[in-house]
Image (cartoon, rainbow over all chains, first blue to last red; front, side, top):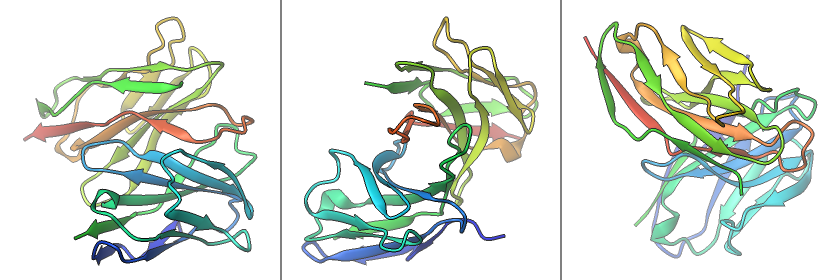
Length: 115
Length: 115
C-alpha cells in the first residue's frame, strides 16, 4: 500500500533561485491539495485540483507560485525567485471526491530552506 | 471566514493522566470536524473525525464530540501514554459536497507525556 509521496524531502536553496516539488497522490484519489506549514503553526491551504483542473487558489499563493497536475495524477509546485519567507514545510494531500467526509491523506512534506 | 481555535501548548502531563485539549470553531453551515496528529518526524495523520452534530469520533483511546451548540470539538483521553507525545491539530472542512474543500487547521497543541 503506497500513501502520498513527496519529493524531495528536503531542499536548501539560495534566495532568488527557482525550486520545484513533486507530489504523487494515492493512486485512485482524484483530489490533490497543497498546504504550507511554518514552524509552530498549522498547515495553511494553498491550492487544490480535482483531476487536472485547479479549482481553488488561496491568496497565499502569490504570482511566484505555480502548481500543475497535467494528467490528473502527480502534481508539481514551483516557486520562482524564492524569498526567505518561503521557508516552510510544503505538504501535499489527496482525497476521493466522493468521500463522505473529505478525509485527506497527507504526505511527509518537503521542507524548504531559503538562505 | 471559517476558523479553528485550539488550546495553546505545550501541554505536559504524567503518564496515565487525563487529557483534554480544547478546540472551538467558527463556520457557516455544517462542517466536518477532525483531529489530526503529527508524531515526531512523521507526517500528519487523521486521528478521528465527526461529520454531524452530536457525533462522537474515537480512535486509539481518544474521543471528541461534535457540539454544535457550543461550537466545540474537545479532544479527550482517559489515560495518556508516553507514545501519545505529539502535536495535535483540530481542523474543519466545509463538507464533502462543497466546492471549497480545503481543511482549515488550528495552530496545533504540542503534548509531552512524562514517564
